[in-house]
Image (cartoon, rainbow, N blue to C red; front, side, top):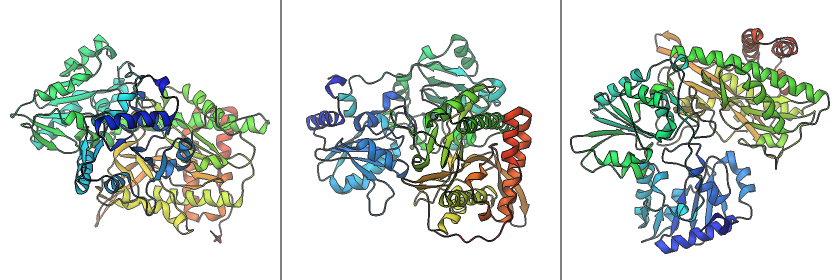
Length: 614
C-alpha cells in the first residue's frame, strides 16, 4: 500500500481496521512514544499523529472495529476538537470528572478472548505490565509483537541522520569519564554488572554528546550499555560520528555499535550478569531481548537524578545564558512595541520571527528549545497554541499577547512566558493577570524544608486563583535540562497524583514556575520564570531551601492591576526588576536600554486593600 491510497484519516482508519481483522485484534492502542519514550518524537514514530491528524505532543489513540478515540489532557482540548472534526475519531478528555482514562475504557470495552495490540517499540515495560493486569481482569490479552500502524504506513519517514557532535568541554564542565564513574559507583551499590539506558537525554548528558534527531531537543537516537568494568557500548548509527569523535569515545572506554544491534547485545548476556534498568524508561521490545537467566535490577537511571542537580559551574553558564536570552527578548519586545505604535501590520507569526532574529545573534545560540507559542487574545487561552501560515491572528494595538518561548545555548536551555499588553486592556484581563502573578510570586518566595517535593508546593501558586473560584489544568513547573530537553525529570511542581512517587527538590535542580489561567474564547494568562533550588537556612527544625530566580526579563506592568498586589508582592516585583535592570543594562544600548529602564522602573501606585470579585 502507498500513502496515496489513504488520502484521509478515515481511509487510514479503514486500512488499520482491515489489518486488525486479519490478525484477530479487537483493539489497537497507538501512544505518543518512540523506543526511547521521548516526549517529542522524530517523524518516524509519529504514528499517532499520522493516523489521527492530531498533532499535539501528548495523546493516545485507540481504535476498535466500531470506535476510535483520542485521549488527551486539557492543554489540547481545543486543538484536538478542531483537528479531529470530520475524522470519525472522538475526543476523550483526560482528567475530567466521570470520564474514563484510556486503560479503564479498554478494561470496560474488551471482553474474554479479545486481543489488544500495541507496538512493542512504543510502550514502556512498566506500562505494559499495568495494561496486562487490567486486561486480565476482563479476560483480554495484550500483544506487543504487532506494529499494525507500521503495516499500513508504507511511506513512513526514515530515521534521522543528523550528525552527533561533542558538547564543547568549556560548557560540558564535567568530563564523561567522571560521569560514567559516578554511574558505575551506583551500579556497584545495587550489585549490577551492566546498566541499560535508552532515554536520550540521559545518554547525551552521560556521554557529553549532542545531536539534532529530535526537533528543538539536542539529542540523538541511541542506546547505551555500560558494564561495571569500565567499558560501555553506544548503539548509534556510525555514520553520524566523525572518526575523531569515535577515537575520543574509545579513550573513555565507549565502543560504537550499530543502533539496531542493541537487542543482539542484550541477548548475549548470561546467568552471571545482573542488569540495571528503569522499567519506566525501557520499551517492551528491548526488554524482551534480555534472556530470562539474567538478573534484573529495576531502579531509576542514576543519571536522571545526577543531571537534574546542576553543578556550580553549570549554573554559572546558565546565569550567563539567562542574561543573553533576556537581552534578546528585550530587543524583540521593544521592536514589537515600536512596530505596533507605527501602525505596521503584524501577526502572531512575526513574533516568532522577531524572537529568532534577536536570539540567533547571541553568543553560543544553537536554536529554539520548543516551538514558540504566540497567542493573541483568545488564542492565548490555548496552552499549547501554535500559529501557522494557514491559521493565525493579526495583532492589534489592544488586548493581551501571550508569548511562551525558549532557546538552546551551549551553556543552557531557556523557557520563559510573558504576557504583553499591546494597548488598552479590560478590567477582567488585568485582574486575571494579577491573580496569576500573585501565585507566581508566592511560589518564587517560598521557603521549604529539605525533603519537600513539588506536589507539596504546587498549591502556593494556585491559592490566589482558588480564592476567586478559578484554576488551571496543567502543572505549575517542570524540570529543565542543561543544553538538553526543555522538559526534564525527575522532579516537577504539579498537583499530587495518587500512587506517584514524591521526588524531593534538591539544590541545583532547575524548575519552571508557570501558573496560568485560561478562559476559552476570551484570553489566556501565563507568567513563567525558571528558578533553581538553593540552600536558604538551617534552623533547629532542620535545613530549608528556597528558589533563586534565573530568568531575566521584565514583566509588562500594563497587563497588571498593581493595586491588587500587597506590599510584599510589590516589593518582590520591584526587587526582581532591579535585578533584571542590573544584569541586562551592560548588554543593551540606546532605544533598547531606554525600554529596559522604563519597564524596570519601581512601581509607583500606592497599595490599598482591593475588593476582588469573581
